[in-house]
Every structure is written in C-alpha cells, then in structure tokens.
Image 1: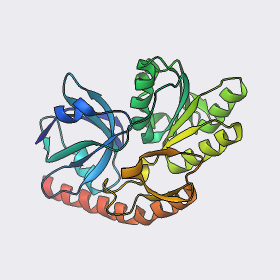
Image 2: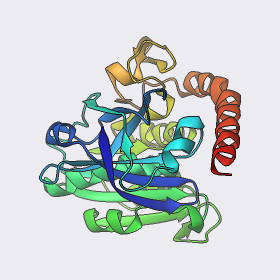
Image 3: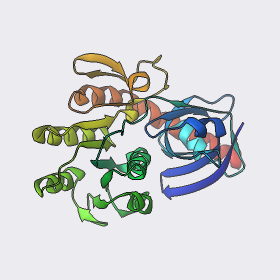
Image 4: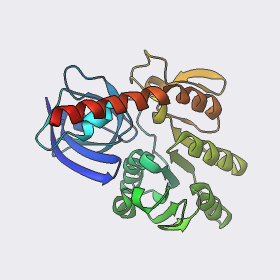
Amino acid sequence: MFEILKRKQLNPSVVRIDVAAPLVAHKAQPGQFIILRTDERGERIPLTIADFDREAGTVAVIFQIVGATTEKLAHLQVGDALADFVGPLGRATETDGLRKVAVVGGGVGCAIAYPVAKKLHEQGTEVHTIVGFRNKELVILEDEFAAVSDRLVMMTDDGSHGDKGLVTNALKALIDGGEQYDEVIAIGPLVMMKFVSLLTKEYGIKTVVSMNPIMIDGTGMCGGCRLTVGGETKFACVDGPEFDGHLVDFDEAMQRGKMYVDFERHAHDESCRLFKKEVR
C-alpha cells in the first residue's frame, strides 16, 4: 500500500497528492509517468509524475477530475493509501545540451511541464516559461514556475490574470522580439500543442510535445494511445510520451480522443452518485 502524505486542492477540479513511494522516487525523471489503482477493485490509470523527492521517498501526481477513478482519487485524504503505484514508466524528457528553452504549458498540462522546467533550471539551462489557462480561477503552480524560470509569462483567455490571449501569442512575441531557442517543449491540450507546433515549424525551431493526454492504460495494450508520427504508427505510453511535434498527426489524435468523452462523463456521474449514496 502507498500512503498519501500530502494533499492539496490546486483549483476546483485539479488536485495534487504526494505519495510515499521510495523505489519510484529513486529512479523518477521528468516526463515519465506512473500507473495507480485506488483500491484492489479499481481501474489502472496512468498519471504523469509532477514532482519527486528522492531523499524523502515521495512522488507527486497532479490530476484533473474527469472520470470515475479521478473522482474517487479526489476523495482520498492524507493517511489513506493507494493499492498500486507503479513506475517510473515511459521515456524521460531529453534535456542534455540544451542552453535555452521555451517551456509552454496549458491547463492541467502545466503539471507535466513543471518538472521539465525544474530539471532544465537545475542543469543551468536558461528557461523561458509560458503557461496558459482559461481564467484566473484555474491557474496552478504559478509560484513553482516562477522559482525555476528565468522568464515567466502568464496567459489567460479572458485576461483575468497575466496577459490576455493564447500561449501561441506570447511565444510568437518572444521569438519576434529576438529570443532564440534551442528547443520548445509544449505540454497541454492537443489543440494547444498542435498550434504551438505549427508556429514553431514556421521558424524552424525544434519542438517536443507530450502525448500524455491520449494515454489510457499506460501499457500499449488497449491501443487507445495509438498515433501517427511522421507517417509511422506509435504508442504514446511505450514509444513516448514525448515526440517531435512537427511530425505528430494531431487531427487524428484529437478525433480518436473524442471517442471516450461520453464514456468518461457517464463513469464520472455514476461515481458521484455512488459516493453520495455511501456518505448518506
């Protein structure tokens, strides 16, 4: 069993938990993920590692409440334990030799972008971070990003916090202003990563994207994370989750992702109904 040592509500639908998992923490790297089960009868879900502390033996994951398992996970408190917490899995983010990088995060994808920015900062890379949210209420990890970024640009769709606009607006302004990046690392909704990649392709800037959003079982067996990269079939969980953004067929990935929306909504609603029944 893996005890939950800390729990923090980051916004109305996003939660961070720190789990006692010393063996995972010992080998964890930014970009990798774990697979957990809330209990012995629970489903297995992959969640990207948001942070880790090797000395303390803890691993943090940040998740958005979208389905039955994340709803159940959100109700767990400090002192509760998870049945399974397996990892680290997936290929770690490649950061060697990078001197100046723009890290672009969107929404809950910022939970994946943060450990990447942190590692780059710790190795001496100049880090410019651009993060975007729909509004002020949904902002997460602002202080954490500020601590590991040489330059931080906050964007909201409605202008309620930071600058108004999209992350692509901010990235374009920085590039047009003379900033030269070895690489852009974009992590967030598929549509955001698509347009970041289209933008950087115009400037010839290498761009890496995380296809974590399309992972389902984390092993490649379900086929749900199948995608086309440079005309070849890949699986986000075993071949990635990071790929060359200029080669990913985002339209195909977004179309496949829509297949599970109704199922997730139904599972989430049923989980809420059962939970309310249990606490009465």
